[in-house]
Amino acid sequence: MNETSLIQTLSIWVLPVLLAITVHEAAHGYVANMLGDKTALMLGRLTLNPIKHIDPISTIILPLVLVMLGGVVFGYAKPVPVDPRNFKKPREHMAIVAAAGPLSNLGMAIGWALLLGLALHGLNQTWIGYPLSMMAQAGITINLILMLLNFIPIPPLDGGRVLSGFLGPMAALKFSRIEPYGLFILLLLLFTGILGKTLWPIEQWLQGLLIGLVV
Picture (cartoon, rainbow, N blue to C red):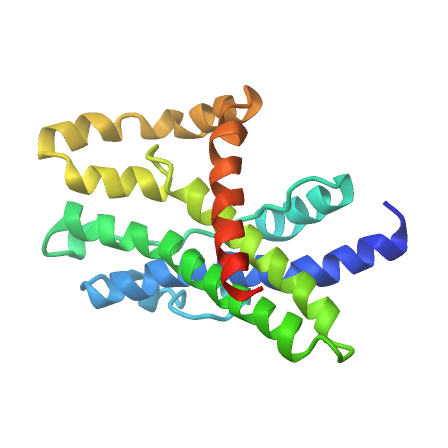
């Protein structure tokens, strides 16, 4: 990738990626705060300020390397701390907090789709129309990927915590024992191609649905 195309790619992807991972983590904190856990608030993480959520490696270096390699852009922020002991119903409320992150990505994907419609129909004759449409498509893509990836029912992903909220106490306890191996399971699914073959068609279908509504 030459320097010009790298700068162009970064200019398109940086804002959508930064917003996707920042709002995702902030959503966890805001919902946890509403349900009685003030941990994120006390640690200064109950904010949309991206600086508070940025991790140098996972938020900056990893997405940058993927951009340079020409692969799918992916990154994540520092997880917002949540203490389920502060909830009246720890398992159920933790499931709600976990779901808030991926659902915020869905909301952002819809928002980017609306911006895409504006770029294609209202601003198509202006200088900002084309770059805004490219950024909007990147926003739709990264948010749908983050939503689907995080909804995989494997702890410590959000989907694993959501599933735990629907299990009985003993079943949830046994299920939680998978968490130390969750990352390895995810990597195994990734490198065997199972993850891509499963998530990519769903992402493409959802993206087509959203874009079809505004084009």
